[in-house]
Image: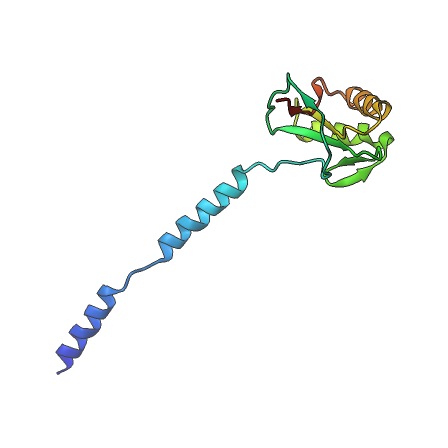
Length: 137
């Protein structure tokens, strides 16, 4: 009788599946995807961009600066003063050397604000400063 009980216990132990290695692989894959993913930093403000026939799509690896119709400047979803643009662009270039600076200006914003932001970005060391526009049709 005890032999049959022992054989039943052995059969139950043999039929169990160990999920630990599978969970290890899943966690390693999760860590891999988190580490290798890139996060796009947007200006954080919705603007009405002007149309341009020569507009081209740029890479997502960029520093974005938004200018609203009320001439407010936004970076990383927070409002900044025009005097702080240079420091923020310098920080962005330190984190991501060679990144392009894209200014997303509302079509109703002042040109003066746009030029001041471009100057601050160039003074920060940005080599590629451009203005975002929608593709014209």
